[in-house]
Length: 366
Image 1 (tube, rainbow, N blue to C red):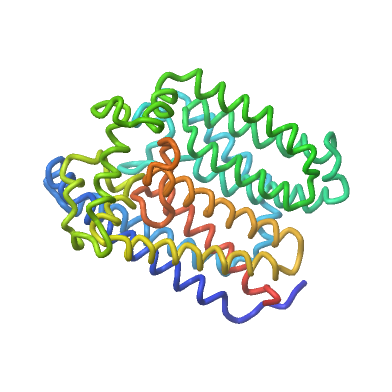
Image 2: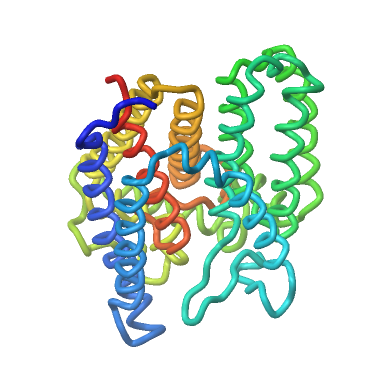
């Protein structure tokens, strides 16, 4: 058993807290007008986000002190629990519908999103599977198909909700892990063509997804319909300029950009803090990913390395998709920005994932 360091990666910890602090400030700034109008309490969303932040930070510190191979022992149990939750959320009366997706299970005044926790459970289990099947990972039948079969089973349950964004992040993360574990590129090439065809099929099968594609290509073709959100996002980013309009001075959050505290919070941040503020946030994410990669490279065993790689891939993919959507580079997918967007399940999951990284860093050779 490797020797544990006395302290975790402090740079990773500090960057996480800075991102969390920026997120709490921006959730209040972005949501205050809407919260005051709907709930007569401008702090409504900020208070809930603060509560989840406290829960997430406590979970992060607890997990930071739990040896990371504990996840290997309980990976199968955690995966089964998440599969059960994904099935329960589909049952009317148990699962709650929001914005057309049955993705939440109500717990008192709050709700959890099982698909978010499935991402971390799948990473933990896949790291265990790939580290144990290292000798057969190059085999299409014994290595690649069992792992992808499990991933796409979870993806199918998430798509029934439907939640294409979360499912895409999970699949992308797992593909990165399988590739890093040593799967053959030729296998990925063939499956990539099949996957691309399936992805196109999913888009064509749902009219609202087709509208997102067409609005992405030309949002001004339907400025009051499918293109409305993307246009309002760009109208927030553009006036921000170099230094922004000032914290709390966003115009688009005043009933122009729908629910600005969630998926499009970066647009409000860019409007209020400008190019400088947006670049600073992206720099923080870059530092976080750099530290995560160092932790993965320095992990004392293959399981720890794959576990760290999966967490970093999940965060990186989610950041790239969210920023891409907000800036009009890719179609709207409904993905939160880690640590910044309003959302209890997403925030708690990300802080828990950082807790795992911090624990691995206590054994890292770097």
